[in-house]
Image (cartoon, rainbow, N blue to C red; front, side, top):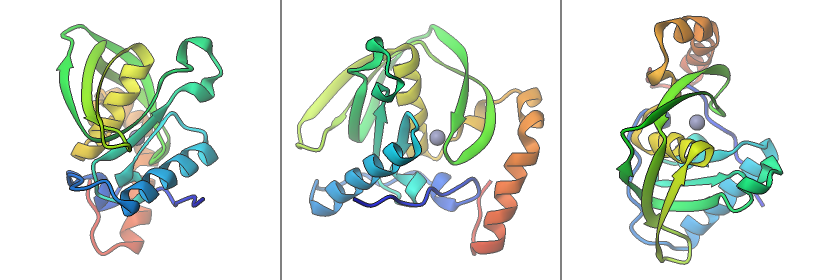
Length: 181
Ligand SMILES: [Zn+2]
């Protein structure tokens, strides 16, 4: 069991597209386990590998922690996921991110999506998701593309959160040779 440190806004891993996983080996399974341990420890709904500084196309989503019957089955580990359908119908809702913990704002997402990818047993799975589960999958998938929730914010929401966004950026700038907005 290994709880990893979550990297915050400004860390370059959050802005670069993640690399495709070539082979599901021990190293990849360890990353999956670390993501699970870290997410359980923090209590979020999803976590992507770039958020622990690993630029690989892996994320997990788990809504079962909400203790709500309708979300019990909503969990997945996805490796090399592809978004193969996203509905034209969209919905705005409030979102947060473990890499920008105090930041909250309205993000527009497709109401329904289909995502296809590998699961750790090396089989391909396609899932259809809507509502909150679909939203979490789209949020985590974005992490693999180097996109963040603040990219969707209205100017008003951005301004409201700017003090925290700038705080993370400044912290990373002190410690890292390269930071990325
Ligand atoms: Zn996030």
